[in-house]
Length: 160
Image (cartoon, rainbow, N blue to C red):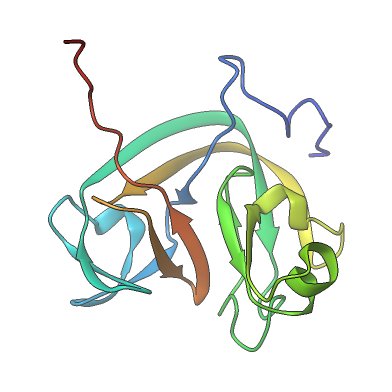
């Protein structure tokens, strides 16, 4: 199925999908587990060390726009195998791309911005489940060997 620019923008609610798809393997203290097995309280390996997962939100989507990273696209075993993510998922890059485009050794950008039509491709799936992981603070996790930025949980504020 060919993807259009509209499909890779925002969904019908005006929100760009962010998250990992079913089957994505995530590093935890219990080993490498599929994202769908994770629950709040599980300890996930992050760049900051082991952190307790604060929340997992799951959404089922039809005609879902995704970004496919071919195995080893961003370096040796990065990702370890083909990886599908929602287009707004923040990917951490630590290679020549970050330096060439942003003038810094590390950059975080939405997955769709890395699409080159060859090794990183835009696709549409008929149906999929997206898992969005949140922690108490901003964290970077490893999914299939690729660094994924996970924003902190939103906290409710009350008016005085």
